[in-house]
Amino acid sequence: MRNPFVMECGEFRASYKEDMALYKIPRVRYRVYAIIAFFAVFPLIFPEYYVGLATLCGIAAIGAIGLNILTGFTGLISIGVGAFLGVGGYTSAILTTKLGLSFWISFPLAGIVTAAVGALFGIPSLRLKGLYLAMATLAAQVIILFVISHWDSLTGGTAGMVLQRPSIGGYMLSSETGYYYLMFVILIFTAIFAMNLFRSRTGRAFVAVRDRDLAAEVMGINLFKYKVLAFAVSSFFVGIAGALLGHYTMIVSPELYSIQVSIEYLAMILVGGLGSVMGSIYGAVFITLLPVVLRGLIETLSVFMPGLEGVFAGLREVVFGAIIILFLIYEPEGLAKMWRNLKDYFKLWPFSY
Image (cartoon, rainbow, N blue to C red; front, side, top):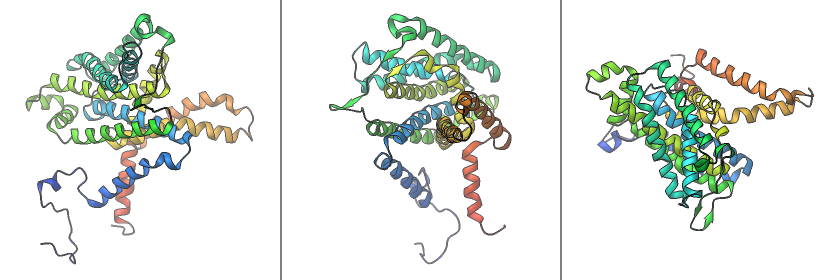
């Protein structure tokens, strides 16, 4: 029996349940609960404009977690995430508008179809690595967008398709608050799944492939199986994000899934931190809000410098590129590592040792 008046040093486990807990330290669990509670009441505190921004950040975070499973944890570079977002969005649009299926049926089917397409384009990963694999995924981006743009009878071509918001029991999720909670629940599920995935045998196999695929193969890991599986799991969540985004904006169109979108998602996991679930969320929020903050800053400065609004587009690209370069040089592990450094600092402060 533990003495409550004795200060214990270390972490102690009294059961397998405690040892297998996702957050083993109580204060960390309470902090996570507090953060979840804050974002659960977020729409009740802030105006709809900020709720809409939070919804976009959450949808981007779901896609970024999916991409990080492939690139950050498995070490397989993909530049085709924009096209896979399009597969998810168009699959849900076709199933709901042309076949008349419910959103709750088309939504998981969009993820499954995107996973199948991702696995198909992941087959060359057994032979290709690094830059060559990146070029293969870039080819997937071009092929998928070409099919979307030219299959007019199915996808509507360059005109795109119009979608509707989902409904629950006759209640249409047309408000920002209703759709925010839908995104919030799916984001929590995605984050918990990804965190637990890399405590499982499959997740550890992904990490082994990333660290040294030849050594992983020698240990008995089937490279083909796990590389294709990584593409499928990653694409599933990217497809889910694409379906969510399509029903949120209520339109899908080829220009919404360009190569620029793929680069933005790569920037999210680079800035947030490769191989970090929470880093994916940090990076998604950072990259999504960056244009909003820049626009607000330019509007403020334009009072003193008229005509500054005309340089917003160019300034946005310059700042976007500069941020990626600075993170790669000074903190390659991204915002997740910066947050860990901050926590480690206050563990010792104010003692110098």
